[in-house]
Image (cartoon, rainbow, N blue to C red; front, side, top):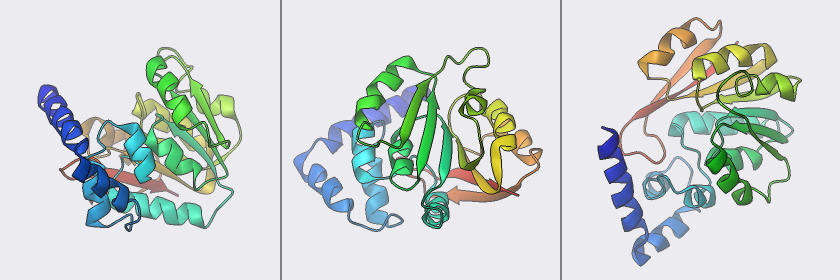
Length: 214
């Protein structure tokens, strides 16, 4: 399965470099975020963070993305903590007052840094996955958060760590929430789940992101 996904990603990246599709992606930036045009353009950006950042979309479920965007629009000074950095970090930075993002992969952390350097409201940390450094980064950040994104490794542990730092009216965006290994943790976390399944950015198949709230 992983080999098939890699083959698909490589093929799409080759197609995306064609001039006609390059032009399509540029034009799609002005389309509505939930439109088919924007979603189709995101398929051409899979595993290409510069394209995803330029397109202004996170690798989440489309419907869930819209709900998070509306949540942040009502809180322009929102404080956000993110487990797992990526194009979503830039997307969040454009909509929140402060974003603290922790990434376990040193190479990816180093590559992403220059891509989001223009966003002065972002703090990007690298923490080793082993031990408590990664999952405990939210405690290191301190304070309470309007939005917590769980989209990296060790997600079950990250969710448990995150809940005490969530504001009473805050939300958690838990990505890939259809995976069986996450279901028990989501069900038992003490928060209500808004399940969003269907069209998701960057992939041609339906996927899920859940919004958890009190």
